[in-house]
Image 1: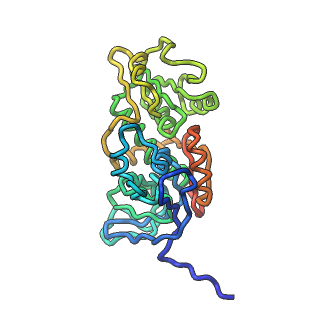
Image 2: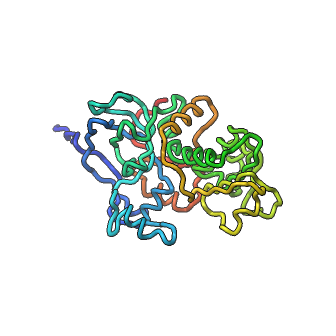
Length: 319
């Protein structure tokens, strides 16, 4: 019996060649990347279906942003055919100029500035990219689940809001990828945290440390009379007319749709240390194998995911 030879120059990847519903995603064999002198080659063990992946795939963009979005994502077809904004995996090889990482290092990565590409068996990442060693007490799935995106965004906004111990903060969308990290980080910084979410997610948000939770299907926080030093809209759904109604006179409103500074490796290292100190964890709603990427996108498209939806690639899971 003749064994089928493995083509080591190829890899599996999820590719989309047109914008549309989840069904445009296809599992294909593509060229395996080769790291440049300043790059490492990461064997991907876990990635996610980020809300951004869903929006790019379907070309769902805010009103008035169509032209800019087309310039970034493509006009007739996607410029970057492999989605995946975050990943975790193991370094398989390194370029000759790489000094900070070595073969075998377990890492987590944001691919936001790298043309995405997490939906593949391999991804090349520059040594100075948004990449850090995986927390020793996290699995690959846990490290991929928002730590390099949702957690970083939550941290940057809380720093921008200059959050202080004892301040009252309301986090709207507290059960999403950004929101679950924002609740934990705000509590770590000593704030009094109120989380807003749906009925089914109340216990989750409480378990993350929220002092109070509000079920938005039953109560309007605007009408409660409570005033907050900071309101952080982690899902970008609070209307402009309501943004200041529940703020103290010097209060701060922030939305995930606001522009904020670029990525910094220092943020990843800071978050890694918090995880290893037991102060921060990722929330995984569902896990799908790579072959079920369409089902995973369908689930995220419903808009009710708790924390993160993870895509796993074959590996021996180890901390």
